[in-house]
Image 1 (cartoon, rainbow, N blue to C red):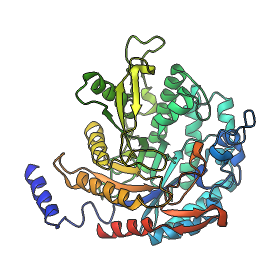
Image 2 (tube, rainbow, N blue to C red):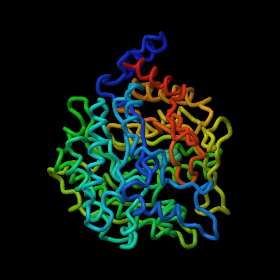
Image 3 (spheres, helix red, strand yellow):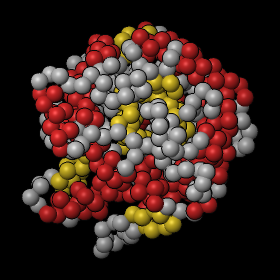
Image 4 (cartoon, rainbow, N blue to C red):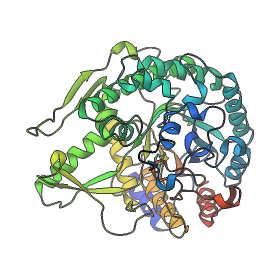
Length: 473
Ligand code: IFM
């Protein structure tokens, strides 16, 4: 292995990097989107929890910056074909997006064949253009009825989610064999069930633990179902180099100690990374969900519960995950602080950052890929990486640097041997509705001109991404 690394490193040093750093024909070059952020509320969006939230005004104040709503978003519902044609021109061979549960299942056990026909047409168009879909089943939004029945605190929630997922896989399975069950499940749990900052607005440690547990169950049930329908690993792992199967897209920032020479900061950073990045995934893989919180803080306790084995029988349902989706954007410094909740404080490192304040730290992509590989031993996909940059003055540099560190992960570097990375999805193909921040942050390779009828205008960075992809083929 060391010799291999040396050879690769010297080839890179002399500008002779192997052109096909991965399986060049099967490497997934894509961009990511989500339904609620792009589609608009057409055909049933008003059945959703976010629709309700965006239209709620406590004391006349909207919970969304600028009073924005996703009622029209960027009208991807009607303009998907135009968007996919742009993606094709950029040289993308895949796109990641989600489908809206609230539109597909507007009331319990009632599915909309009209909405499904729309999604079929959408994904068929993608295929016609030579673009492989990666479909996310849950990207933060829910039907309102789901919360009326207890949401993720209810023990029936995994079955309800499975029923919806079965309907989607039955109807779209001939067009898609790359599935994500949940986007950023721990971020969703923290914001929706611990801090109450997004729907359903629950607060408290116990509700967060319960929601994480039911979501972990839901993931395992859906992974088993998809494997039964479409085949389990090793096929899913891609004997032919083509990635298939099921993963989760996880928010995986780098957490470093504020002061690497302060043992308390070092321990705090390890703890935060474990809770936010790894505990949930470890639980899904091991069948036992465990959160260790620091001892001795009033009202704070840990969690340790076995996930029912019958959710994921050993055969033919395959493993709980075929690959790990890595959403990587930024790095935080963690400082021990006696006064703060959980005795830790998040600090944004100084230096370059996006319009939304997130620090730019490209080396972190290689580090997080290496840590994910070491922990789970599974193929990896960068399911999101991008920058809020309305001027498009830093996006291309950001992209090139992150790709350089992804190359190092794939080729091997002084940090370790070559890793099995199967794809890169830039967030996002085009500007869209950025949740609590409305439309103020621009993540798109393609600008959406909101004041000019949602006209799509590729930014210079889009051409830069095309060239980067081309250079690696
Ligand atoms: O827009 C979001 C996306 O929905 C989930 N990951 C982070 C993106 C940028 O904030």
